[in-house]
Amino acid sequence: MKQNAYIAGVGMTQFGKHLDRGLKSLTIEAINQALKDAGLEGKDLEAAYMGNAAAGIIVGQICVPGQVALREIGIGHIPVINIENACASASTAFNQACTMITSGLYDVVLATGAEKLFHQDKLKTFSVFSGAVDVENYDAVEQQIVARAEAAGMKLDMEGAGAKRSVFMDIYASMALEHMSKYGTTQAQFAAVSAKNSYHGSLNPRAQFREQLTVEQVLASPEIVYPLTRPMCSPVGDGAAAVVLVSERKARQMGLKDPVKVASSVLRSGWDPQSEDEASIAQICAMEAY
Image (cartoon, rainbow, N blue to C red; front, side, top):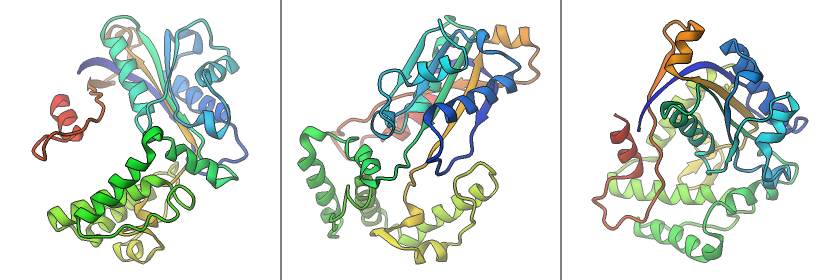
């Protein structure tokens, strides 16, 4: 979707293991940074889109995570929309905030993403991901994972899935095996992606992991489920980020010099493809955005 919104301010916490901090604390830190960066106050906000996926399980906060964080810092009255959309929760909040500005409904909108995934009980953390598939058809989900691996000529050992690791590591492992079979991709090539990402993380003082790894180090790390070693797997983490978005009119009024414009933001959901020739969701979103 074509957008016409501008970034006035951003904020981000340190990402990592924050067992001593609550979800509100992380959310508020990011919001205050974004408001300060924009040179605005809470009273200037006209709406807020708050992305979070796991608060109901990890911290027990349901229904109103956005409202309780904002009220803690004196922000009320405005529409607060809580968005739970899996891994896309925060980007969906961003998309919706941009869309509302582009449509002309608001001039100043907050979009945030905040998450707490670390918990003393690892099974509670893993249960977040076990619940992020069709739980009423869980057996079929497992069968699909195994079938994808077998079609690639590999046997996937799912013992420990959901108990010793997130079941999504098995899902991603089966996808990796499928990719290896279809395109001749090697484990070392997957490791190269992790090594490249570790370099970028080493440059970011707020990144959860800042150690730069080589391909050899990635391959030598403990295996989670073949072909994925630990650095190839998505880690759990706690943290928050926020952005204050404004309309073109508000940007001029604020005297923003050369602000970053959001030219396009596309949101779609997955589907069951009818043939192997169908474009993927990533390809479709990219084509629409460009």
